[in-house]
Each structure stands twice: as C-alpha cells, then as structure tokens.
Image (cartoon, rainbow, N blue to C red; front, side, top):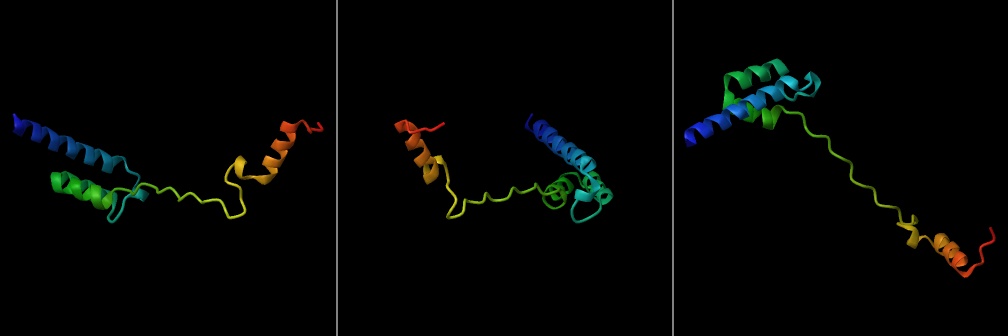
Length: 97
C-alpha cells in the first residue's frame, strides 16, 4: 500500500512538473530553452522535475520594501501638528466655517 501511495505521489509530481514547464511562457524560463526543459522532465521524471523546480522555474516577483516616511513627514494624523491644532480649535468651538 505504501508503494502505491509513493508511486502516485511521484506520478503527481511528474505531471505537475510537466504541466508547469508546458504552461510557463518561453521568455520566463531560466537557464535552458523551454523545449529542452520539456525533454529533461519527460526523460528523467523525478530528477528532471526537481531540477526544473530549482533551476528552470521563473522566480516569483519580489515586492519592493516599503519606504518609511521621511523625518519631516507625519506618520499619522496624531503626529501632524497642523491637524492637532485644527482639531483642538474645532473642539473648543472656535470653528469659523
């Protein structure tokens, strides 16, 4: 029973790898041409799929690091002196408008 499960797992991995190679756009494939990757995955099922996952698959786009606000930029409304001054004026009832 364990052998059947391992065999099904390897078959699923091989099919996933093959499908991934076939559906990846040509310009995103790394290291060797897409046709060669297909041959590698088909002819060497387990090792070819593993090598595709590590060396051929496109890299996920990385998000840029968030830029922290500069030293003079308020981080939120409670850090903005103009906002606090206006809020205080409105709370006292000095609102002209």
